[in-house]
Image 1 (cartoon, helix red, strand yellow):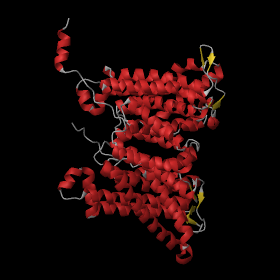
Image 2: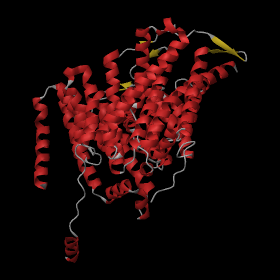
Image 3: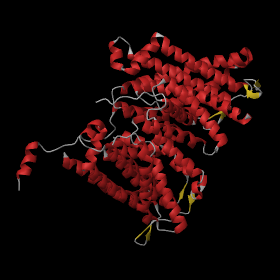
Image 4: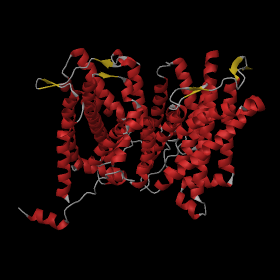
Length: 301
Length: 320
C-alpha cells in the first residue's frame, strides 16, 4: 500500500507537468488547428533558462529558497512567453492561410532550430541543476513520507491550471480566445482581434511550458537538450487523450497519463513504461475517437 | 513542355548511372542513403501524399521488414534478396492488423496513434519480444545480398541495386498514381464524404493504401538490413518517421519527383555542409521554416491532372 501511494503521488506530480505542457498544445490547436511541434523545445528552453538564471543571479542567498524559486518561475515564464510569441510571428503567421501540413513542417523546422540552438549554447551533455535550492524534506501525510518538492510541484501545477481555467472562463480575453477557437471568421465579425488572440495564446501556452521545464529541472535535477521531444510527445499524447482543443481535457489527460505511467512502471514492467501509455491511448481512441472530453464533431458537408 | 520534362529526367538518370565512377566510397554511400530514404518516402507518399492520412509511424513498417530479413537470414540462412517480398508481406500484414481499428480516426488523432505504434514497436524490439529480436544490441551478421552469383558488398555495387529498385518503385507508383485506385485515393484525400457518396469505399481504400505503403517499406527494410549487416532498434525510432514525413511534405506531397528531391535535400544536404558541423542542423531548421513560408506546397508540388478535352474523348469513342 505504501508503494502504491508513493507511485500515485509521483504519478500525480509528473502528470501535473504533462498537463502544463499539454495545455500549450491544446490551446494552440484550439485557435489555429496546428500541432505546435516546437512546443516541447520551448519547454526545454524554459529548463535551461531556469538553470542559467539560478546559477548566475544567486537568488537563493538573497530571497530564501521559496522566494527565489517563485521569482525564477516568473522570470522563466516571461522569457519563454516572449520566445513563443516570436515563434508565432516568424514561423506560423505567414502560413495562416496555407494548407495545414505546411505549418506542421514549419513547426518541425522550428523544433530542429531550437533544439540545435540549445545544444550549441549549452553543449550536448546532461546539465545538472544545483540541488541545494529547495530543502530536501519529506512531509508526513497520513503516515506517508512524501517529498516536499513533489507536493509543491503538484500544488503549483494545480494552481496554474485553476488560474488558467478562471482566466479562460471569466475574463473578456478568455471569452475572445474561446470564441476564436469555435469560429475564427465569426469572431472577427464580432470585433475580436483574432491576431491578438493568437498572440495571447502563444504567450500563455509557452509560459506554462517554460514553468513545466523549470519544475522538471528542480524535480529530477538534470536536463538535456533532447528532453523536449520526450516530454513534448508525452504531453501531446495527453492532449489527444483528453480531446485536443479542450482545455479541461488537457488537464485530465495529463494527470491521467502521469498516473498510468507511474503505476504501470511499478506494477507491470518498467521497461514497457512508455509502451503502456501509448497502448492505453490507442485503446481509448478506438472506443472514443475524439478523446475523453472531446466533443463529437458532426460531419460538415 | 512535356518533351523538355522527359529530357530533364533522362539527363538526371544518365548522370546518376555514371556518378559512382567519379565519387569516392563515402559519397556513394551518402547517395545510397538518399536512395533508401527516397524509396521509403515514396512508400509513405502513398499514405500521406495520395490518401492524405497523417501517418508519422512509417519507421515501424520499415523496422518490421528489416527484422524479418535479419531473423530469417541469421537463423535459417535464406538468401537476403529472396526474403525481400516476404519482408514486405510481413510488414503489410502487420499494417493490415494494426491499421484496421484506427483507420477511421481523423487527422491529428491518427497522427498520434501512428507515433504510438512506432514507439511500441521500438520498445518491443528493445525488450527482445519473443526472444528473437536481440534486445537493444539488435542483430548482427546479416549476409550480403547475392544476385546471379555475384555478391554485392561495395558501396557502388549497392548503389546500383538500390537505384535499380528505385526505378522499379518510380515506375510502379507512377502507374498507381494514374490508375483507378490512385484517383480514388486522391478523391478521398480532397473530400472523403463526397468520395463515399460517389461510391468509393473509403475505409477499404485507406486500408489498402496503408498496406501498400507498409509492404514497400518492408522491402526497403530488407535492403537496409543487407547494406548495414547489423540492425538495432534505435535505427527505427520516432525521429526516422519524422524525417520521412518531412521529406514528403518538403519535396511536395503527392509528387514523385518532389519526394525524391526532398530526400536529396533532407538526407543529402546536411552531408554537404559537414564543415559547418554543429551549426548546420540549426540552419537547416531555419531553412525549413523559410522554405514552407515561400513554397507552401513543397518544392515540386504535383501537377494538376490533365484530361483530354471532351470533344477528343467523344471522337475516341466514335472510332470503331
